Length: 552
Image (cartoon, rainbow, N blue to C red; front, side):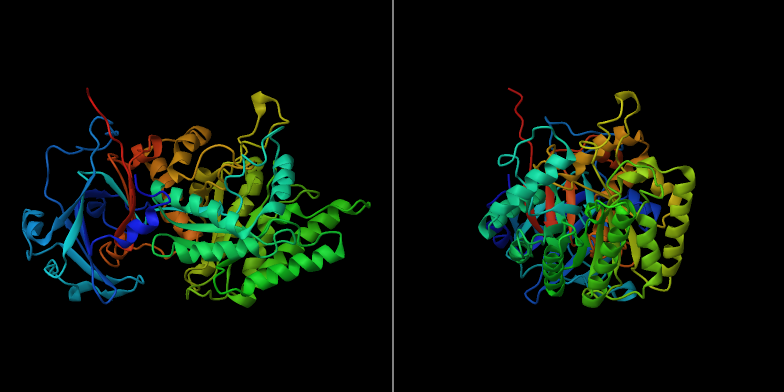
């Protein structure tokens, strides 16, 4: 299996070209491609030139009779499909029934930096000359599903992973998770953070993750150590995984102690200036309540000031915004209002700005468990605000609101009787349909192996079967939306480039991809994700895991 700690050396040894034979491309539900493009099976050829350019050729694969035959075929451990072989150039003419130099249905030239070099009629119409390439790695997917862009973590805490061995679970409450994790942070070192973060990223690569938005905490306990470790890992894995870093304030930005207030705000300002930081974020719900009679009202005011400060730092430094909001199950009321309307109103009131990537800002809201107890009127008001922000996007392309659903049921709703206990999870699928596309909804693993998320690992697809049961939806359309939430939509929430299969016949969208070995349909990807994965980054295989079975 590739994708563990040894994956670093593996990437440097790859040959100059890669051929994917017979893949079913799972274009996202919002992709503007034709139905025929969605249904066809393709061959995808990558050639890496000495000048850094990547030539991608995409065309229909010949029909075959002995591969995965159609929708609804699940992985068979006795017949795993995808295989990898390294071939020399003399074998190339046998790889396509039509041979080298034959006319293609579609082709495109792109650069490693995701910039198209040719499109439309000017795009090449023949396979490129590969005689200068010494070897070609070939993946015969035999009809397996390919996810353009690959899987993505829109919300993962890079610095708090793999802590269960240090601080075990006693009562399992959210308050315990905050307290014991805060205590563990006192022992964080740069070396420890890099080691655990490297393990998380390598594990994610083996699951098919090509990009992630990673939160690193900034506060008086850890100072900027988590941020420095995150920057180190971002650089170390740059060729294998796109890492968008969030300078994140988990602690209050307006604590009652003035000296603590000045310290954490100064640290967050320092972090926001750092060029390698892509977003500024906070958890406004954590702001304390004072002991006087005005405590509740004062707490809400501090939460709003928290939001204002993060918006200001992001705007001044050209960063995205990432809030962890409404992390409770209290229905909106004057004493416990939802903070989502305030964020959306501020986004509408403030002038927009451009981030370092050259696009407009993006605003991501995580958790939002309060949405699960919204009344119909509350949801209608939220949709109205979202549509107001969405209508402004027509004039400010790439600016949008993103909602990130996380599996928070492990903590919330414990005080309720089991018969009426809330699912404690944002009603994401309902939000997608009711908003009419005004909001980009994604789903993330949140934490890995700590008190906040003790269950599961870094596999985004592992969330999908669980959420099918939680949300009680499993139609093909629902499954497409679920897959989008950990792939295309997750990439948007994480600040990555959008994928547009029509603009470049899908070629640029295929620079990064994940093959789900033996999975023939989007519905099966959501209902029964296969173990086998092949992860492609910048046109090279960077991780692979497979199933080996014996019949005797």
